[in-house]
Length: 261
Image 1 (tube, one colour):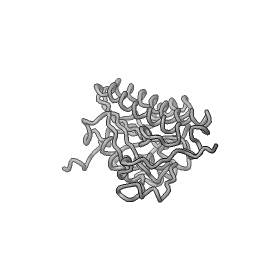
Image 2 (tube, helix red, strand yellow):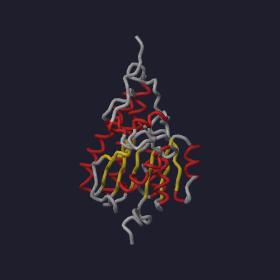
Image 3 (cartoon, helix red, strand yellow):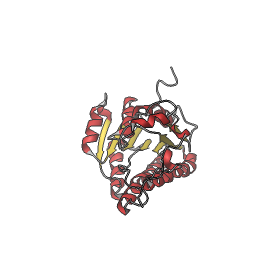
Image 4 (cartoon, one colour):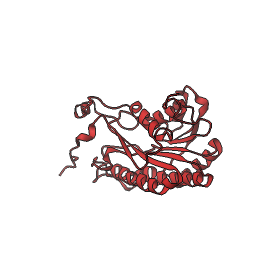
């Protein structure tokens, strides 16, 4: 039997994917379901979740959850739903993130937008990961977590609320990996490039900055995401960041924003 033929154990593995209604989160959630993993599709938009589950070839393995993870109580509600619907989570993917607006540069972003971006990306990610880890540790079970960060965790994006939230997540991955590793729980980051999916509307001209010559698609990240999530394929990998960007990180294409005089 090929090493790659059964990357997950459908009898025991259960997944929770936030931001599963569209973009990269949706693609990864569908990939997990395609591998036979019962998966909770969490998103703020009910129509998107319905459409995502409808796109699965095995919709019986996909379960919906709708809520706004910028609310701390919603995180607790999601954890409770995962306990009931899945009987616990072994594989956690945190892809949820509020929309980005190019107008929200350092002199324009308001407090609410700043707080929401950090709440969904960083605070919800930490709370969910810690509580899932506690459950796994108590049950003496291994796990695998994957956080969607960004190239702009280390490079200015003219969106300070977004870049700082992703930078925080990048360090959170390392902190959690170091703490949870002794319990058999791996924590890694997936770092997308210019992916024409979800809330990112990419300018086609950006392709000239990408060595592989094209913008990315959500599906480009799925093989790497599933490989890293799989304890069979990546059981000795934790605290790592996997860049999937077609080579875009070899250059910084952003100029400072025009804020007027």
